[in-house]
Image (tube, rainbow, N blue to C red; front, side, top):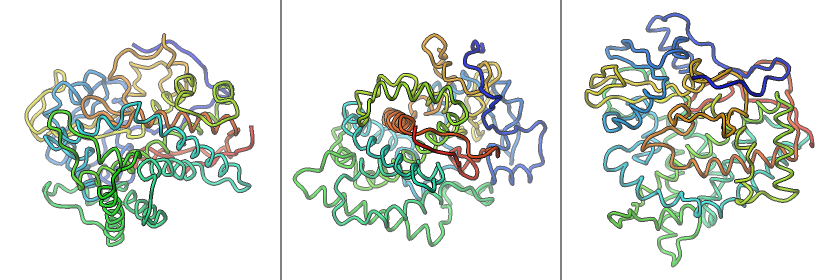
Length: 457
């Protein structure tokens, strides 16, 4: 059932959204649209129905947008599904067999081993790093020539993950490694038309020479850090140190050097990119909703005062969290993911055959006409205790089931600290009347970046 209405849009503002397909499109055109922007193939009916099924390239595809149907794939029959061959071929050359791409026993072993590293007590000491990055972003945004917003957010969240992973970088060229990571993120973030061809799963996706060199630079740097830490008497208290010391509670075994290396790249790709984009969208929405921005600023000044944000402050940033939750409802960082059935199963009453594909459209779930009041509107108050959805699988910005994002707590603490700090010190307003377009490159971002006017608050 849709929720009751809350905060109404100011000045007629309607947040940017995609234009869904009203009718089927030819196969070749669908492939071209997917290459340019996978979200462009979402049918309008998927914002009203829980599931739509149909043939595509010789197999059946199930477009999923209902909570019960999401739960069926992500939790109820979890073992019947694997990440799609397309996503695996795009990610594995860069991420290896890390937690984001692994399946079966390899995934279970890594998940169980890594889980303790993301407990709240392990994460709280990283709050000062997040606060420093937020203050760095304030300085960048205060410059006479204001940089593009998404670039500043990317710089800030990269600074966080870099220092969280490597507090001590002896023999480590930060600039060289940062450049290599940017090349690798570009490699995994852009779909090619050839990716849609029905090639065997075992066939590796060709990497450009530039990307192969970047991967070699990154791996050499991380492997050098791992070797140096293992040779030291103390591995360190940063995230790399935790990765070197965590153990599977059942077997007592730790992670291999290869596991750690690939986990580091996964945390960089999944952690810095998604949080930076969530912050970008949050500032876009607040810039167009002065009332909400003023409320967040008042809260930030009351909770943080004039000093740096701490882990203890985060639990008191209630409205800040509401804004972030509503931002990720409208713009889930990973708006759509795919799964392939490895055996016959079902999605609710819908029969599924081995080889069928499920497209989990979180973007449609979060804007579903039967689940949300004013589904395309920005209303942070829908996350008040008495209004927030009670169905767990109605809202999935971090996925769901056993494979839900392991770094969710880290991401929310980082986003809250950074957003509260920036809005406390700065005022954001639209830079122009030009509309913002949505684009999906694994993550959901403003197509041509985001430009806002920024001034001291």
